[in-house]
Image (cartoon, rainbow over all chains, first blue to last red):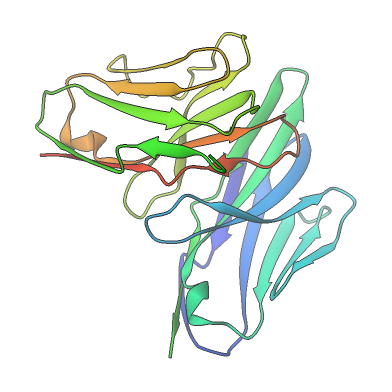
Length: 114
Length: 114
């Protein structure tokens, strides 16, 4: 069964600190993996997309990693800001002749406090 | 418009009433998804439209839920005889092509069934 598990479920950190969010998946056949940021009351917005051959991709203070062998991805946030407080969702695409399926994780809720 | 828009942004209704939610995708985007997000939960796939192909309705939770889309334009999600369990944020997303292309999400409609 295709599944995406995220951890931790929630996280509270102080402004300026770094943090890492985890995403483990059992999706086949794997096409790509995206991290989305969802601010409260808003729709998700894509942060990064990674394909099978990519190990690391950065977007400002956000750095995503992908280990296709262990089927794990992480999202590292550097020097956190109050505006980073949001839900971070990992989404894995599975592409086959039958079509493309998107499997969503339940998200990690990050709270950055001053 | 520059992004996906949804209306209304908030809807409060009484149990047993019908509601209609609207999604205006980005112009030129052939694919459109509807998702449901209950409080503190992940995104739950409802239905997917791709061009003129038959929609994938596999995520609709019951026959009280239906959705339509005219060509590659506006989509409406209809919930008949609403129940309290239908209370959630309903998100719409569109994209130009599958397999790697980014989903652009609307802001969602928050539905509250009293």
